[in-house]
Length: 190
Image (cartoon, rainbow, N blue to C red; front, side, top):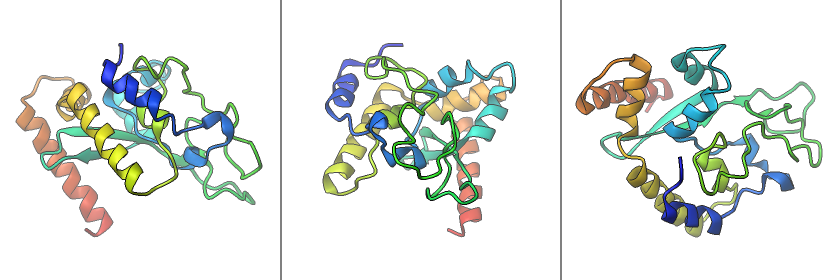
């Protein structure tokens, strides 16, 4: 699936994740869209159902007041014994991070050089995420988020139809999302 031109231009302009230059983004991976998860799942479909795959490898987060946008954050491995890294890195790395210099070089198993033009296995948030923060990055984050929501609308609805393997209204899907968000908040003590 081709990326819409304005989103592709934004990603090419903001290549902030330099995975091949030892970027520590891999310890806090960027988000995958629903469409990314479908591509990634193709590699795992013989082992898991789509629902089990998502539960095993991703943490989900909803965005906007009506929770209409769902994004999937790859889980991270535990810190290895004696490792110097803050954690073992993204579950999709080819090897667990220890904190050794340059260990992330060529380490992402999902990387795809077509990710600036197409939806691929490389999570869209990893294409452009950065560990740097500040006002400029916050504006970029909000702009990118609104573009993802605009070009890939109603992702929460499409996701819940997929994992429940049945048609449902958008209101039903958003109701499930609201209940799940309530449980997340409860677990976090919010």
